[in-house]
Image (cartoon, rainbow, N blue to C red):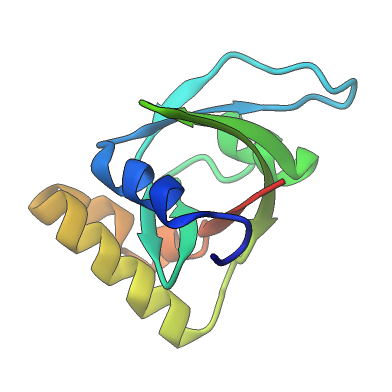
Length: 124
């Protein structure tokens, strides 16, 4: 188990085309959940935004650092860590995970700009 995720958690996340993320507000309340693409690699869970780094769900997630995610069979509170310009190894692994899971549809998620929006989700 890594970062609080069990093997079953990771399997459920991998099997889902997308997860729903509801960011926690300053008062702890949950915002409306939105669907986003998700990948796992090395026992960790990652999401990216292909645009709108400072606004929308992404901007709120970075500011709050907390969210609730769900996929079929799993709902979990998570901490959100903004990796920004992370190491080349992490970027390459997350890029590969997006390409493997989403094929050619992942093109917008594996650009240098998208890589700067890499968030790691750890089970709280």
